[in-house]
Image (cartoon, rainbow, N blue to C red; front, side, top):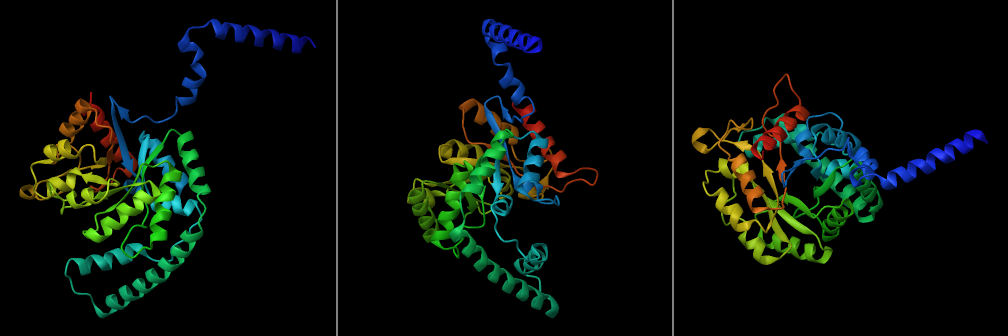
Length: 342
């Protein structure tokens, strides 16, 4: 009884003391709760990261991906499809994707394949087609609850998901698969889905219409095919069609009007991939930030000055040094942003 009375007395005094304490002290529990959470909102500019940046790390689960993001100090992300869909129970792929990418790369570059390589690529493609059917069937029945759970797990860790990029929006995907991807994005808390621009006006029209139906924005990513008017047709087709601009690829394509493009399209840009690439005259290299020709700092300052709300998404594509790893390199990119926005 004595111990109980002492506990009640201390609790009452503590509550009374807290009620009379300054406002900042009353908020201490919330401050303590958020101490270990990442924060990459820098002086009004949201710096994010696409989880593709961690592709070389062995564990690609949703839990491991969250760990990588937190270690980098990133508080907002563009989430690739695999971590989320595997978390939601999608059947694992039996395909050696790295090998398929290597052989496909030779074909894309116009290199001839040996008879053995041609047979291997054909077999891999056959496996991929079969797997696509399995995935389509799974997606047609997939519950959104696991995606909602993943969203909560990330939010509790201080990480918001602003974009989702599953391989569900291609010309060969059914309307049901595309709608599934958009509903999953909504369950994850994303404002938009991202995909490579298909260079197909009929398909951007289709995606825009499905975006309207599912109340989800579609942001088209571009590589070196980006031009000042690259997105114009898609933007006219639907209010749901938007930009996922890539500043590095734009510079590597030889363009000099990046700032003008951002100023023109800022209200239709939902996220912007940020990397440092060289101009064609300097080799088009994908290089360590600050050593290329992409005006990253100038763009970040523009975003800060004009209060643009879209995130600058770190995309780690330069070769990671032998004595480093993707997490350390993303941390360096984030620090580059901090110094640019100081």
